[in-house]
Image (cartoon, rainbow, N blue to C red; front, side, top):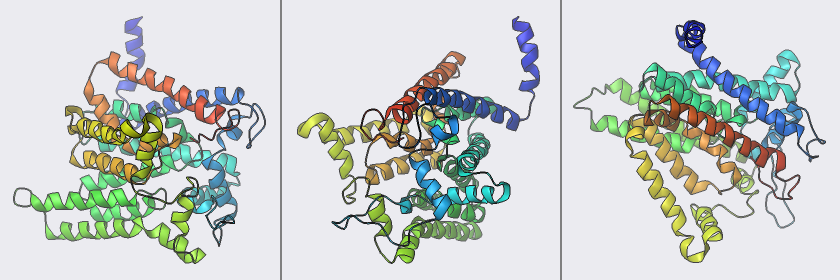
Length: 397
């Protein structure tokens, strides 16, 4: 039987890399589909659908609903506000590229949002897996790079890669931008970064990574060539990244006439103005009290620093380690920690390769996949099936 299995798998071992990556990613999405469909079958009535909705109705909720509003009618010309002047949640918190692509698919095929949105997300996810593999191959052998992709594709929050959220699209663009940065193809990276900054708010951390990358190249210029034309191209990429980091805020200001349109909208969900780093300390106090609570963010930073300096993470290269460190710092500065935090860990996908580097044991790697599949079930049932509709608490995915 073992010999027969080896014969059946022999053509797959000889298959091109893109076939292997596509099959691995497709298998992961089928697992997520089964989990989402099962959760939909057991779902109660919600603000988005009745009880036991079909798969497409079940995944068209939370942020997908906001993207659908953009798909249908664009952005408001003024920021809707409460009687006390604070902003109400509105479309300006959500970037335009994803719903624009869905709208383009609708114009060509006539497919409604409920189909077009997930199709764009799923297609972008497949493309992201291919680019991530190419990125991982810069640092790992084919087998290990493929396992890294598999870990990314089965991450506990990975079902979001096939629903009408912008995560798969932004991951595709981020992976492409990092790949081009590492290969010193700065001019090619400029349009990718422009699109990246129109898909999700990733411009600030990416601009920081570009700046440090160029500083390191300049510092090592006597040992490693840094031609003037590459330096100028790198500075152009840095300028583009910096400008695009604030482009959406400026566009919201221009359209609405309100300088704080984007910032006010982003903080509408938390009910308070943005104070850098403070929400994490507030969360620590609420979890552990006024004495130990402020130490929790410090402990998280220390643990993250230790992990980012571990042997397996060092093997993913300077730029990918730097991206993970800067992105974590960015989240610490601006994020209000809540249930969506798990989804916002997806841009840390380079750590999937570091996880594959921990051990080449098949038992270890399959155990990680099994653990991720179980945690997918927990994530979907907790946030997509049970939250808000049956518990009265808002825990968005």
